[in-house]
Image 1 (spheres, rainbow, N blue to C red):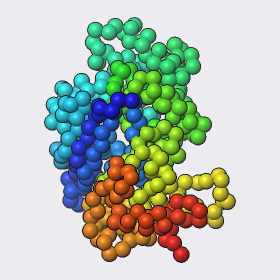
Image 2 (image 1 turned 30 degrees about the vertical axis):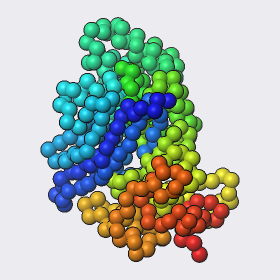
Image 3 (image 1 turned 135 degrees about the vertical axis):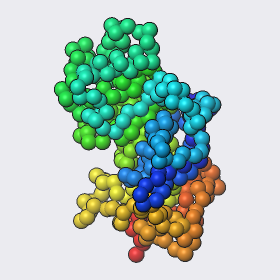
Image 4 (image 1 turned 90 degrees about the horizontal axis):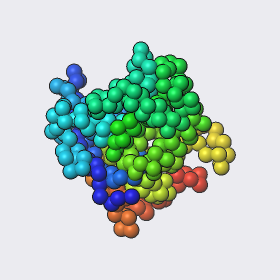
Amino acid sequence: MSSQPLLSVGDLRVGFATEGGRLQAVDGVGFDLAPGEVLAIVGESGSGKSVTAQTILGLTRSPDSVIEGSVRLGGAELLNAGEAELRKVRGARVGMIFQDPMTSLNPVYRVGAQIVEAIRAHEPGTSKEEARERAIELLRSVGIAEAAQRVGDYPHEFSGGMRQRAMIAMALALEPEVLIADEPTTALDVTVQAQILRLLEDLNRSRNLATILITHDLGVVAEVADRVLVMYAGKVVEEGTLDQIFYDPQHPYTWGLLGSLSRLDRPRPQRLPQIGGAPPSLLAPPTGCAFRPRCPHEFGKCAEVPALDGRLPEAAAHRDRCWLDPEQKAERRQVEGGIGLEAPS
């Protein structure tokens, strides 16, 4: 894995003008991504994960949006790039697997034709026959059996897992350097989820892709990620390696996400654990720590906005936004022999 970042996002802020005021969907997000690395961005719906990813490709541009910060791909700034320049980046250098393949694929065109169109749009010198052969090979490479026959099928003739594989094939058609997978396993059964995750892991390793995996499922993260960004209310509230996030989490929101996972090695609880309350309105966020209204460990200092800092001397790159000191965190996150959010008795 290269140590040099291929993609660098710095202090990214994305706001939208609405009738109720300005909605700050992304507020100061930053990260670096190197070839061969898998970065997982996790959080509840509305935390800003997908908006962050779409902004990298310029898909959130509109008269009502305000976008600030920096997105650099191989040293070139994308935020101020024109549409013609972005069209050369989309697909060719940055591929994206969208959340719902049934709505991302055009229902009136054959799957193969849509892959062929993507190839020829960027490589006009490629004949239809050559592009079709590449489409067949791509479908075969993502595990679709009898690809030569299925290339002529319509999206509704594919199962959910096959549609997701077709979207992965389309995202890889132009051999991009960066792959963004937005909730790639949503609505799939667990067996197909495992197959898709294994496929993404194999592709990342074989093609040395820099991969961003967007999900709300920490179980998915545990399978493939190298590093994790935890987002809440548009901000990164914790970032670290996979082991740091799972075995030494520092933010109460992360504790709540981990504590909400069902565990087969423990007795069945009377009630499934959950994070109380609901995410805040981004039109009128709470003062101080955004998670404060839902946090059982809230105290006076939480009325001030905490910075994203490294608070562990032995792991400076493991950063979080919580005023509790590390000793307090280690004590308060222990719930019934595991990590959770419930206040200690």
